[in-house]
Length: 281
Image (tube, rainbow, N blue to C red; front, side, top):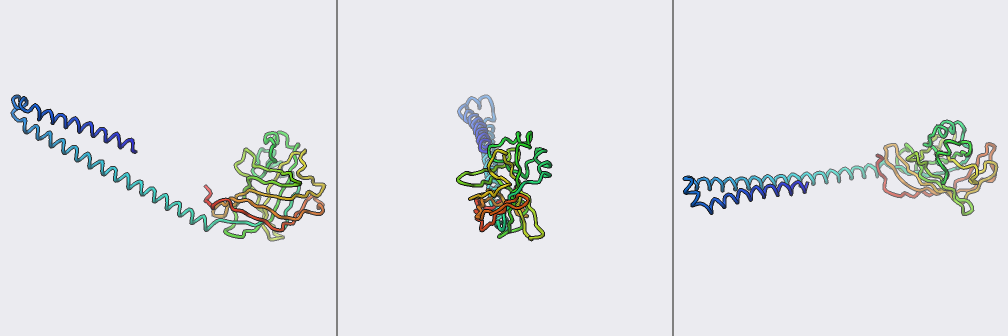
């Protein structure tokens, strides 16, 4: 807009200069013009009046244009500030924070879900171990192990949960870390939200894809971990997202169950919010 305004001013100055120059010439050569034309005075007066009228109307129009643009910019800025304030107010009143509790389970994933999702190149509810080739998983699914990771949770602040997504999970054992990432074909790894009618608790379930050569988890033995951390996004029922990191403090199992499930007793969990709540776009 500034470039356009400068061009308009340049054109106005050029035209005004031409009119002024012609008027000045008429004044300089007034004797010659008077000998040739009987009404030179009237013509010169008309030129001066025309120049003054043109200059004043053009300047007035430019002032009105500049004023309208300034008012428009102020209104746009006020509207943006008001919209931002409304979003902040809505987000601060409708976010959700959860707390993981009770017993955490790691067990072999149902082959039904492996066939339904992984074999059909759908990784929406899965995370893969860092370093694995996603395309190789699709082409050779039998070369990998599939486990489900389930944790009960409760909403400790805010509204009901609509979805939980993970960016990264890592397990630590004997100073060795096992990282699980969102597949490149997906924007996020979405977790199942399951309500258990018997325990009356909500559960979050995410599936993990592991190479058969990995020592991450062996269903036939007790798998002890020293630390588990999760980077996740929690979306409330009204679409407000909270990004945070959860660290679990738990007791390792003493024995495996009949279905090769490892059960970890959660003593406490720590949820750290990484930023302000925002509305999901």
